[in-house]
Image (tube, rainbow, N blue to C red):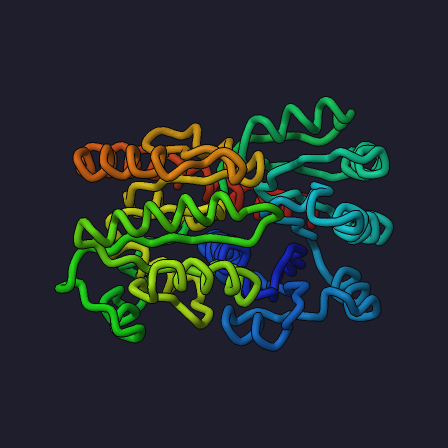
Length: 367
């Protein structure tokens, strides 16, 4: 039985990252159903229980060393692990895990990562010295490949694939969306649903005002507005503030949903308006039109895709732009939905290619 260790931002109740992990685990098992998977997680027991994997604490050095010593392959990813926006320790942590694996003689794969921004010299130096020792790199976008090349990563094979979440099954595999909605007292008979996923960000007051006005406009059109905290409870204060500004006329999802249930719920939406990348991807995967408000280059990159709409950045978004896009999408929803379904369907195979390459590397290095 081959063994794999997966390192990433897992166990923090961020639905986007938990969806990434589920997508990776499902894809690996679809290629080799006997594979043994261990995840480095902030909540090992919860991660192990929800996915049927082994899991160890991502901060327990002894457990990490033991897991890597006994593995046949380290997978780093997916997500935006090589960036220094979230803090100065992000890159050193993830590359420290990689360096440990290489020191123990283990093959390493970067799995559908998004790279950047990398603004500090330390981060660039670490990437150049450590990532050049990785055995295989797959990336979710071409911009990440260009950044690695600019930094000086030349030796590993680099392939551009797609975000693993595009490989997840749609709502048909999960709990029925109607049942998830009913758990929050939502009935589709009361009007079409629009989901809004907001996150906290420095000086996001103007974007909150714009969202509140746009959501008020949707309510006036007879839509039900559902506010979705993707990272629980981090997103909850911003979500509660938006709910308050709407006079509590929206529905606030005040508890965490796993990837399956949120995917099922998203499939019942008429439209998604979101800041977080994977809220947008959840919509795109199911042909639900999306409007993005960007706080990060990864969101900008995604919003350049067919059938996706950008309302600007958190600093520049206006209610007028949001309302104009809402009107356009509601008038042309069928065409937009078809375009999105075609786009995301094309990325499904690219997303699953990540796992095929991982299994190929695993067996090649084991022989």
